[in-house]
Image (cartoon, rainbow, N blue to C red):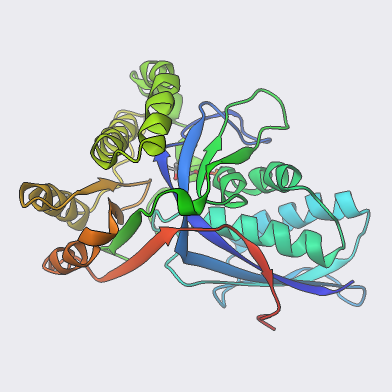
Length: 325
Ligand code: DP6
C-alpha cells in the first residue's frame, strides 16, 4: 500500500443541484451544470497503514468531529471496494476558505476519492470515480471532471457527471469575492432536506431541463451575455427557493448584497460580469479575461470585500508527488 496525493478543484454551479431524491445515495432532484475552477484547489494525501488502529484525519490542520465522521464513512466505501480493513492517515488542505459557499466539499471529496483509491491500487474509470465521489458529496461527482460539466439527474445509483465542453473551449474567469471567512450558518447537506418545502420547488424542477438546454447552447456559441443572464437568473431563483423553504435559509450577508449591486453597476459601465452564489455568502463574479482586472479593481472598492480569489476554467483533478506528510 502506498501513499497517494491528489489535487482537485472546486466548481461553481451555473445550474444548481438542490434537493435530493435519495439522501443516502445522494441522488439529485435535478440535473446541474458547473464549471471546474482552477484556483480553488484542495490537496489531499492518504496513506493506509496496517499498523494504524484508527483513521487519523486532519482537514486544514483541524480534526472537526462531524467532518471526520463523513470522511471515515467515505473511506469505508473505498475500503469495501478494495476489500481491506486497513485504517488510513489523511491530510487535506484547501487554498480557499471552506464552509463559506465555495464548494469545498466538492473538491475535498473528489481529492479524497482519487487519493484513497490510488493509494489502495484501485484502477477506476472516470465514471466510476464520479459515482464514488458523489456518495461523499454531490458536488464532488462533478469535481472529478474537467471544464464545463453536467451531472444528469438519474434514478439509479450509477448517477454521475461528465464533461460537456473541455476547459480550453471557452476562457471564462471567476473572480470570487469573499466577504467573510466564518462558517456559513446552514450546511448545504442540511439545506437540501428543506428544498421541497418551498412552494416554488416543483415549478423550479419543471423548468430545469429547458434551462440546461439553453445554457448548453449559450456555452456552445460562447454567447457571454445570454450565458450570464441565465446564470444570474438561476442564482436568484435558487435563492428564492432557500428564502421560501421552511425553515427559511437566508444565506446572504450585507457584503453579499453590496457585491451584487457592484456587479450591476459594472454592467452599467459596459463591463460584462454576472454573479452567482451558492448556499453561502461569498460571491462568484463570472467575467471574460478582458474585463477581469476592472472587475477586481471595482470589487475591492467595497468595504465588505476581504479578499479576492481569481479562478479559470480548470482541467480537473490529478495525482501529484507533492505529499502533505
Ligand atoms: C448550492 O454538494 O454541498 O452548492 O451532496 O450534501 O454534500 P451534499 O451537498 P453539496 O450541495 C451543493 C449545493 C449548491 C449547488 C451546487 O453546487 O450545485
